[in-house]
Length: 134
Image (cartoon, rainbow, N blue to C red; front, side, top):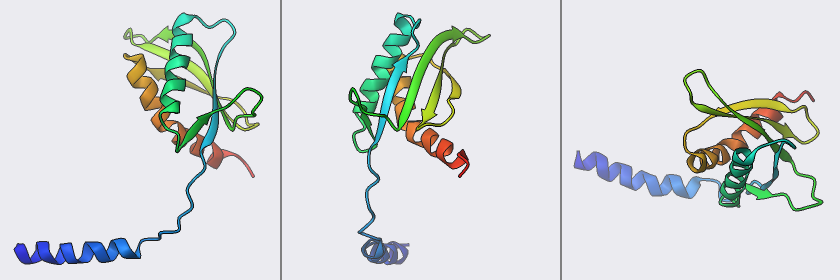
């Protein structure tokens, strides 16, 4: 067993040295979190938490500045309830000039779920980009 451990330890540095070092970093995606005109305070709170969570991920996102055209828009529309009583956030994702894609997101803790949504947002944008006809 010790021999296997030593062999693995000897291979790992060699593998790390052969990994590509020149991989270009992916630029941060500009994102704008908006709320529907008639959204209530609970939706505004969700938007605030999502913006804060996105700001914590500067390698992946930057919140679009006023006048800047965002690459990705998250429109938070309303909060309702599922049949089991779980609150659900409804809204739309829009990538570039594409068609808005509706979403429903069940949650219990706004801050924790906003952080989770921010963590997964780049993946959603990637799925939408892959589905866009060329």
